[in-house]
Length: 375
Image (cartoon, rainbow, N blue to C red; front, top):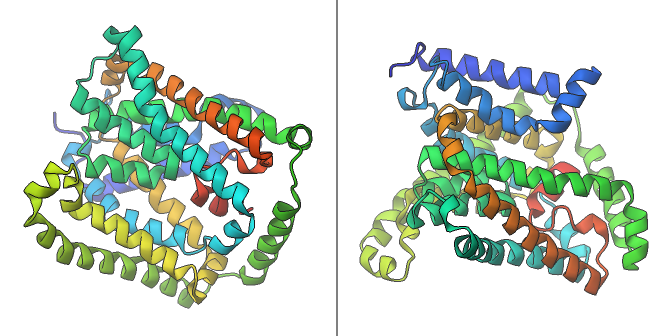
């Protein structure tokens, strides 16, 4: 069905207004809004409001728009560069082996938790899953991508493994709902972190030192951006995106010549141009984090990166049909079981090595640690 608005200039304006309203209300001091967003995550609305505008309202449609292609091919690589260039890898290493052990434990919990959860659900309640096996593993890869590396990784998995829009929409809901259940426990734990650390017998001195050092660095580079600063920031973001596309254009045809061999080894994702765009953009961002470009965080690099990723989220949302989510409710059982396995491994390892509670919430998301908590 043809949407009411098919002009992408109009659709862009609608999505920007939607995102602005969500962020404005989520930060509104009114108690009503605070209570609402306590139970309904803002990220979920960034998916669902555009989805509602698609179905049942029929105002916009991802099928009649090129915005998702623009956002995923141009804004996503730019976002990765801007988010990665301010990562303090040295600071993370200075936390010592416990931080790395917790990171690998959390990642292992996600890698192993997915297959184990899927096996358990199919063994004891096979009839609650309607997706076929091939669709299922592809869809679950997007949840793993999100839990390990956030929304940018999730979108990358969608494109690389060719996950259908409707199944992806369900996976987004599984991701957000299950992750926010765990986040509720983490927020409670953050309020009693000293008590937990005492129980764990953890040494938090390295974390306190790093917090102070990073806060001092941010204060030293933060400034009111000039027009020149913003042009340099955008040149780094989109110049890096151009290099990522160029590299992908060079590498992909070479690997395509060996497509049959790669398929035999289940490495056919290496023939995806989008895969190489993401890999190169991320590598560039990490490389820039060791240069003076890191100071672009002082003029809002991560904020611009967040804007790009949320616009991408909105374009994904307008491709979703909410009615089809109800047909795959069994995926929530997999998601909850998966998260329980992940959390169990983190608790066991954290207790054994006496890791500070600070390292637990984002052990599988080191980028999120540095960007949003800023240590």
